[in-house]
Image (cartoon, rainbow, N blue to C red):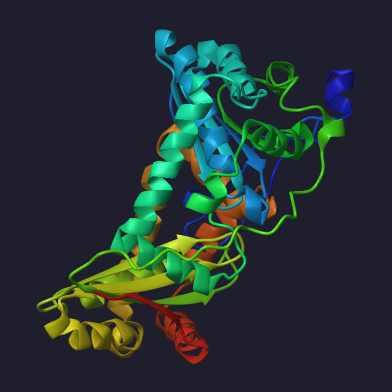
Length: 401
């Protein structure tokens, strides 16, 4: 072992025991590294021969007046990554998660150093003086305008604001997007894109020394770290969107975010509602927020069926609870587990599952523990969970004709 590696935290992770241990072990890291001043590095196994995938997560918290800055950084980074990746056939992505930013690359293991280079470019200082910045902000503003003018999107934004008051929307609003000038976006990058705060998840047949050498020089200078802008968000409540139908929704919040039962509940509620909407439309969504899940049930109907729609929305969760049986819960749990395992069959999917789970609390075993917890979900556990939602009650929102 080199002197550099000897100075690092080098750990072989223990795999949780219990049912489905083989599936759980898929998400357990082989090695953890913490170089001084660098990103935390998690090395996983390699589900595909000759394939490498890397996912770099960057914690980010926007102030109320900065909402949407991360989306502009995402767009600028993705543009840089795609330009560099296109000639060599590397797959790249950039996303804004509830906890920050995530940049990912996938390609041939032989091109590992180039993949790491793409990540360095992704988190490099953005160019905020050229046409790409203007285009990114224009697109974000168009999306924000559509969200305030489309009844379904307006309903969802109101539900989210009611479920988590004070939490800036990661897509921003018309009022905040107009404040996002080049200086403000650059400031958000400087304080958030610190290498020491990042986490890199790697699935590739490479030794730790190669990973360490390839990930030097990430992000902004450490001395630029500071807190988010504490200026208040500009206040403006948009008028109701033009609509001929009534939109109504209820949203239930639950903690902690590590609990797998909300994912099972969303499937159960959706199945319960199949065929229940007669003369109107209904939907179920599950949102991840930084500290909680939000289960939202929404409906839309023309005025003559609006009362029936509202009653169906309000009865969705209690009706699901009353109809539960063991087979329904087992099937929903199996669907959640199957979806997770299907995503993890590729190197890109594996680093995505492990990396996203780590964003919540930094635990490298978070994905493995979540799968183990999922295996323990049964009828009594789901009844208790839904009873808790019913007791705490939902928030409500509507958009009227």
